[in-house]
Length: 326
Image 1: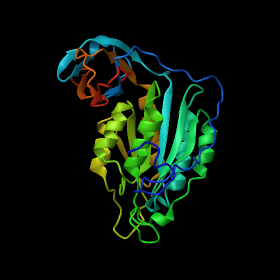
Image 2: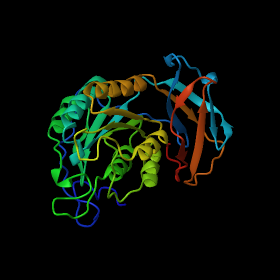
Image 3: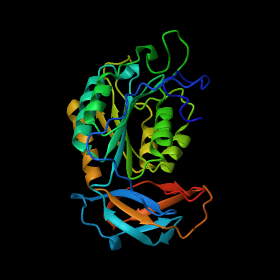
Image 4: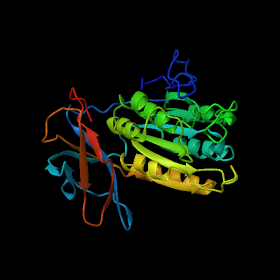
């Protein structure tokens, strides 16, 4: 799919000129943004680790082993990254099923960014329903994101997320939104990169597939978190989430996870706190692969840091042609 063709237009048709962005100009509050420069052909693996007592914050290089295609790799760098620049994309489901939980999402998401963003970080905001819209472009101002988030509205024409008011099949373009966020917004960025989806997990009508969406996120080295939230009163089929398996795939393959909050505001705030805690305890492990071929192929990786330690990280990467940083 041509990147950028979905911004602000109905799906699934990719034809026609790209629309003007709804985003306000980026804000620059405070110090200039920093970038991380590490040598080419270096694979960067961000991860968090926990045991029965919670997050582990004192791991050392010798505590961990990284395998690529089941072959042990020599670790070059190992640090705990509390202050490395962070890029956050918030993806807001504005289909009809989110009608009564949107205010909760707006409040909790704004508070999360207020707590997390520092002058060297940046964030952007995307909404998705039958369209994918960039509501706020890169900014380090939590206030700017809050203003854009407050302007987000439910696309009631989307109905259940699968039809428009005129009966023409459309959809809830979750995969397209994630793909565009990863491929267009995050891939060129350095440092830590995460996407947080606030959604009921429903997907219908995207041009992209689960596979291509995961691939885009892995190529961008973006960690995806999905906060499952939905309106209990929406529809007549009872309360539940669709696409749970797919959301688990999307998150586990990229080093994130799914957090189910129902329609509970307190659980939603706690979900954002959990993500914040993980970001504060992240490590960065880097290695140069013993397989030096830059063939564009997927390389599975496995990270171990002790028998009773649960490691949360991505499942692999693509050996980019041209030797770009991974």
